[in-house]
Image 1 (cartoon, helix red, strand yellow):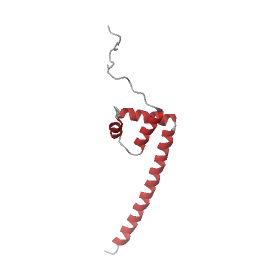
Image 2 (tube, rainbow, N blue to C red):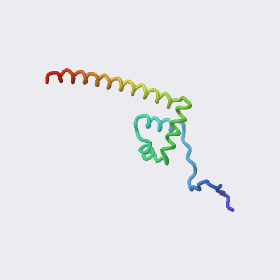
Image 3 (cartoon, helix red, strand yellow):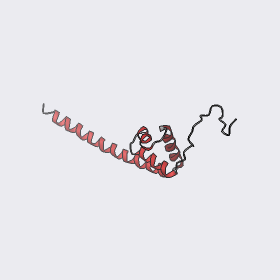
Image 4 (tube, rainbow, N blue to C red):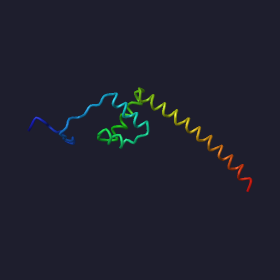
Length: 103
């Protein structure tokens, strides 16, 4: 047997496992929060699996760090946009009922 020993059920790869900094992971998760798809982020950054990104996001939110703050800010932003769109919808409904009376 050689120096490398592959355990049963484990994949043998030629390249070593890559390590990523906390800042890199945070930046990647922020890209997801900004609306980029996991697939596009993986393709752009040369990452192997979208599942990895979702795991980083979940871990970051659990730890409550910068990622959680970014996620909370995004939620507040989306809630404000939803309220604005609902107001616009209500105005348009009223306008439609007013202009619909002329017929």
